Length: 451
Ligand SMILES: [Zn+2]
Image (tube, rainbow, N blue to C red; front, side, top):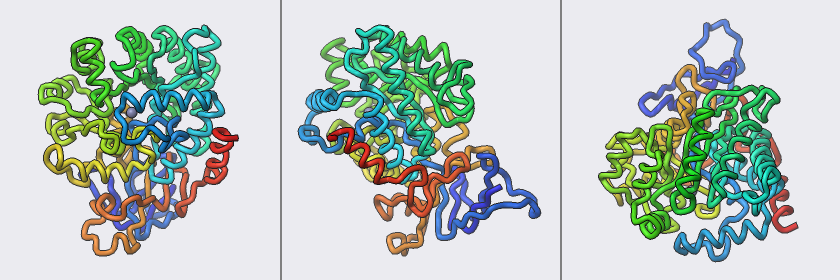
């Protein structure tokens, strides 16, 4: 039994806060135990305690390709081939994704991200033409990514993405990845190796989902075949829509809007989360709400790149659950979800009414978790997974702040938590990563990219 004692405030969920101690047992938040139950006390003095942040949309591979020449201030149509050329030069293989994942997951943990959804879109060259060997290559990529996240103690949602993959090859690979990571009696990477429900491994640390990059890159057939894999295993489906190039290509190729196509293709449904959703119309918002689609806002990518802004207040007002993601280092350069929560709050008044700090914090926690189909994540009510962050608000950057919860977003940009716990285990203490030496991870990536 752990007791987190002395917090300035504990954010239980968007509507509930307390100054009581928070109790954790067996990896779960529990009710206050009887006084004579022995416990280990964790000092939360001077801190606001929040649920661990859930980054609903990342491309961890891009952590190795930040601020590349030719990828800043350019249209998405130029950005995509520039990134693809960089991946091609670096050669995507298990050693590359191990290095980029370790850096990306570590960066996230140090910034309070306890769960990250990695929309993995890029695969070894020619995997679609290489038969079973190509499939095995993709499984090796997925296993490598899952191992690195597990070694650092972060939760991972591995989204088997596709960007112009051969449709059959993508589906065969997705099926094999489900088996390797969370399914099958022979054991996956998940701790127990037994099949979980809905693509979630038994210990909840690893989840598999599927996700074509969007109608701009993938055909109806790819969506349909990945759909079959999702249906077979109860996987969540994730895609991207309505960034600049997506709208342009949908119009040019099909004479339609991206969401019209997704609707026709069976991807406007309540097990689907759509990232970005820039410049959606009122009709489209209503349609998404009716279908129960969840959304992921990624302002840290879309805003600086000029690819659009999702109208978050309007989506929420219509009843769409909105989560928050950073998207990848190729466009955002940082996996700091709280910084992007601050940006989401700051940019909201440009495209609708302001969105309060607590609401945005709720998006970065419960909102993201809802889209992943993970009701145990993103809050700290009894029964919740014990994923939590201790944010020290005792320094000068928080001095004079009347509301320390709103202050998490308004004050001290770029703040990092003092401690991060995942499933009741510490991953960060005194601001330091426990699962690895940060410098080793940086050196390993440098060696792999330039060695
Ligand atoms: Zn993205």
